[in-house]
Amino acid sequence: MKLQEIKNIDISGKKVFIRCDFNVPMDEYRNITDDRRIRSALNTIRYCIDNDCSIILASHFGRPKNGFEEEFSLQPIAKRLHTLLKQEIQMAPGIVDDETMKMANELKSGEILLLENMRFDAGETKNNEELSAKLASMAEIYVNDAFGVSHRAHSSVEGIAQHFDIEHKAAGFLLAKEIKFFHHIVHNPKRPFVSIVGGSKVSGKLEALYNLVPKVDKILIGGGMAFTFLKALGHEIGNSLVEDDLIPEAIKIMDEAKELGVKLYLPVDVVAAEAFDAEAIAKHVTVQEIPKNWMGLDIGPASAQLFSLALRDANTILWNGPMGVYEMDKFAKGSTKISHAVASSFATTVVGGGDTADLVRVTGDEDEMTFISTGGGASLELIEGKVLPGVKALVIEE
Image: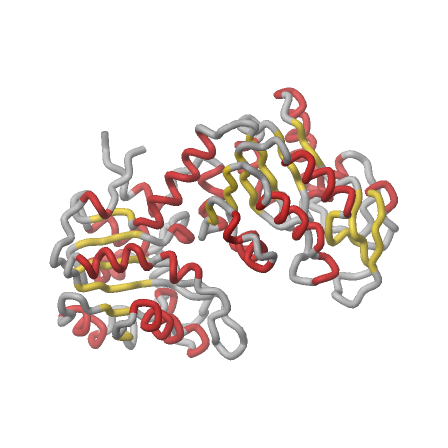
C-alpha cells in the first residue's frame, strides 16, 4: 500500500484544509490536561506555514448531541494552538455557515483558521455529501492528519477526500507515521513478537485477537476481558466482568494459539474487591479462589511478575489496553508494573489506544516507549488487517 504523503505534493502558497484530531482530555473547568494530540499535529501545520499556505484546521471534540454546545467548543484548543505556534489562530463561529465560509475565503498566506467542532453539524458523522462538498470548496489541498478518526467514514475524513484528486490530497506527517509503524509491526516484526491485550471487553478486540494470534510468538491477556477466558477454562470468576456469549470464541482463540505454538498467558492471580468502588475492601487471590460475589479489578502481583518475565526476551511489543481499572489507585498496580516492564525492555514498543497512552503518561514511562499511537479504535482496525476509510482515499493506485 503506497500512501500519498504531504511532502510529495505541491502545496506552496495554496489553501490547505487539514483534518486533525484535537479530541483531548479536559477537566471540569475546560483546562486541557494532556495536549499530546495537539502537539502531534504541529509538524504538519508548521510545514504548511513554511510553504506559505493559508491553513484551515478541522477537528471533532467529544460527543455533542444537538448542534452547538459551549462545553464542546474548540475555543480551548485555539488557545493552546496559539501558545504552541506563537501566532494568532482565527476561531470560526461555525463550520460551513456564511460567516465561516467568508473567513475561509479571505484567509491569507500564513494565516490559520480553526473551524468549530465538526460534530456540531449532524452531517459529519453521516458522511453527508453536501457537507463534504462545502468543506472541500474551502481549500485547494486536503490533508488528513487525524489517525484517531481515520477508521470512521465521516464527512471531514472520508467524504471530503472524494473531491480532490491524488495530486491535491495527502496524509500528514502524523498519519503517515502511524500507518507505516503499524504496517511494519504487523507484517514485518522483529521476533520474538509479544502482544499485550487488555481493556474491559473481548467483543471490542475479537477481530484483533484473531488477526494477532497467527502473527505473534506470545500473547498476554489482562484487564476485564481476561475473565471471559478464565471462565472458559472453568474458573469461578464471581461478579467479574464477563461476556458469556463469547466464551466459545475465547476457547477458539486459545485452541488456535495452541495449534500454532503461540504461548498464551492469562492472569494467575487478581486483585478482587467487593464492589466496583475505589473505597471497596480488596484482596489478592489466585484465579482459583475468587470469592463468589467479588469481582477481579486488576491483575495480581504474581501475574505482573509472570507477564514481565514473558516480556523479557521480546524484540517487538505491541500493547493495547490496561491490565485493570487503572483510574483507581487501588487497582492500578498491575498496569503500572506492566508499563514499567515494557518501558525497561530492549524491544521496539508500540502503545496503541487512548487508555494505554494515558496510562503510560501517568506512570511516567511515556518517553521510554518507541511509539505511542494517537488512535485506539483506528490502531485496532489496522491490527485487524482492515484498510481505514480515511486512509483508503489517500492510497496511490499502482
